[in-house]
Image (tube, rainbow, N blue to C red; front, side, top):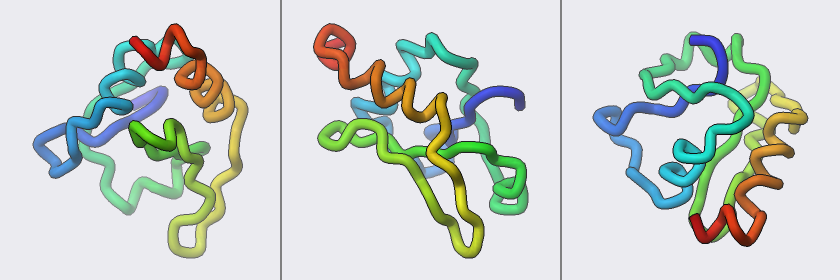
Length: 88
């Protein structure tokens, strides 16, 4: 899919508070819930994890592949760190 991808809840991911918040304020780009097999990681341009304490944490390495901290990841960090957004 075009845009951002998050694993579907039936794939074993937790239905976390920050994940839900990011899905609810998807102002930057479309977010699709689907399975993303490891074989497709080479197509990924940016990646991050969500956590209710740490917010948005960029993923910089998976195995031997380096991922840049891109503009959209930085924008997600800004959005979720705003007090009126974080309290959601």
